[in-house]
Amino acid sequence: MAIPVETFFLAPDTEGTLQARIQQMIAEGILSGRFAKGEKLPSSRKLAAHLGVSRITVTLAYTELLANDYLVSRDRSGYFVSDNAPEPTGLAPRGDRSDAIDWSRALGRRYTGGATPEKPQDWAAYPYPFIYGQTDPRLFDHANWRHCALRAMGRQDFQALTADQYDRDDPKLVEFVLRHTLPRRGIVAEPEEVLVTMGAQNALWLTAQVLLTPRRRAVIEDPCFHALRDILVQSRCHLTAVPVDADGLPPDALPERADVIFSTPSHQSPTNTTMPMDRRERLLAKAAAMDALIVEDDYEFEMAYLGAPSPALKSLDREGRVIYVGSFSKSIFPGLRLGYLVGSRAFIREARALRTSVLRHPPGHIQRTAAYFLSLGHYDALIRRLGQTFARRRSAMVEALEHHGLSIAGTGRFGGSSIWMRAPDGVDTGALDLALRRQGVLIEPGAPFFHREAPPRNHYRLAYSSIPSERIRDGIAILAREMARQAEDA
Image (tube, rainbow, N blue to C red):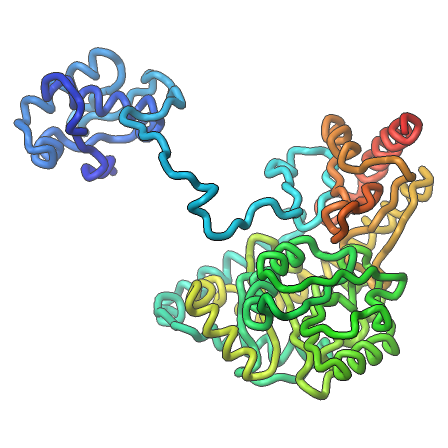
């Protein structure tokens, strides 16, 4: 297939003959990397008609480029970018304009500068990636996911795949959430009380946009999910951070007045603590007394391989006070970006309207593929396999940490995929992370999780979702040696 002829145009400010300008235009396309080696150029007839020049002019330009080894001719096939063509230079194309806009004044709002850390894209190339939020591709059921994707593309599902559903979600996916996922958390809901989102983070953003204004107050846990804090800061609401203890968010420490309380009661992020049942009931009572809403992020509840998880806070709610956030991105694979909101009809109606104005709905093909993967039993089989593997990895990690005397600050009572750690006083885990990367080890520094002017810098998180069991011991040994060196220097 030839390069589209519409990508070729002669800049009006270039000099020289038409032949030279065409030759220069194609050479610049190759040198800038826009035209790759082996790509076919338009025929001389089509390019001449598009540019409004004679065919012989284009042919002569092609011939000159052929002589300079930019192009190669193949019998009865046309002209192609030569394998021996010069490598792209990375230089900006001719006619590059300077940016005359003062963006410091033009930007109405800024979204950069948050505390969300940057994670290396090549994390899989590291031999010891103790990095959270990624998955081991060897554990995923590629064959059955592919089967479900092909089924979703079949004639029977064509309408669900291709139609603009406007503000609706895939009924098969919603039905699975209602009949299988929510009952496992003790939650009963109707279709009008569920909204599919582009992952849990999108669900939290929708919730903040619908519920918060600059005059309202939100409460977050400290430490907490750093992306949630960035969302709330961007909403310009009043923000209060309440330090968590060994049982999670303490209701008695809440401010006198609040409008929305964000919490992770079943699996606190990032400390992994679980809120006891009596504290959950006190949290609901405190929220009712101040007429506040609670947003429950129930992430990783599926990773309960050490015992049955506690019922969701939403299951104890009798007043419609709790908005529930769930996600399939952690349990299936992170790139799926598929989650859901559960709440009262009035709230879901507004969240649906906001979602519609931004992205209509998550892609129909992804929703239908996930619906098949869930309903055909592949999801439950995947969860069992992940639980068995994570249990072995967790055991290996705890053993290695204890062997080297590293301090564990929090582990999930029912499972999970990470361990919250504390380094000796004086050790900056940001600097520790940089030093470990040079030795093939990835950790997650803990400072971004705290909402304080001077957050503690000696916490960090170790995940075992993306590292094989047999590498854990060696990776922890490297971590321990570097930790000891930096503690001695401190």
